[in-house]
Amino acid sequence: MPTFTPPTYFTPWNGDKGPRDLLKWYDGIPTGYSVLITSGAASTHPGVVSPSQDDIDAADSGSGFGDRAAFIGGRSYTVTSGEQTILEAAGYTVT
Image 1 (cartoon, rainbow, N blue to C red):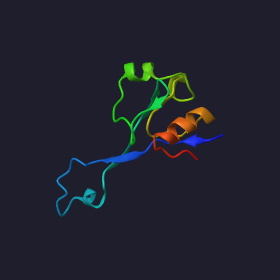
Image 2: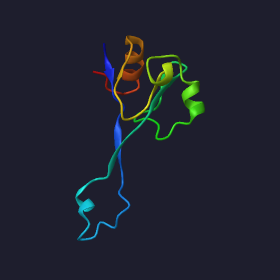
Image 3: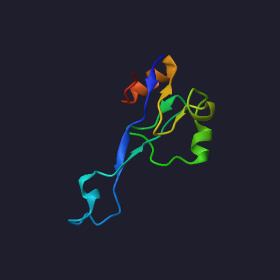
Image 4: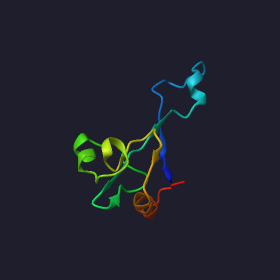
């Protein structure tokens, strides 16, 4: 079965990144985008930063979060071949 993991981005640290700040060596906190399939089309690449509950509820039925085609960032999901086709057509990588 194909597996999909939504892309990630880095949320910046709130520190001052001064000479004694150890966090200056890090890019930030890895944060996952969310990808929703609604009306047979996936969210525009790279995804949605903070989908609302209404957005998730409006997603098609599927194999993601809450039996919807809502793939919340930070997790890997086993997807159907139909979802794989939609996700790959939108520019996402499914393995």
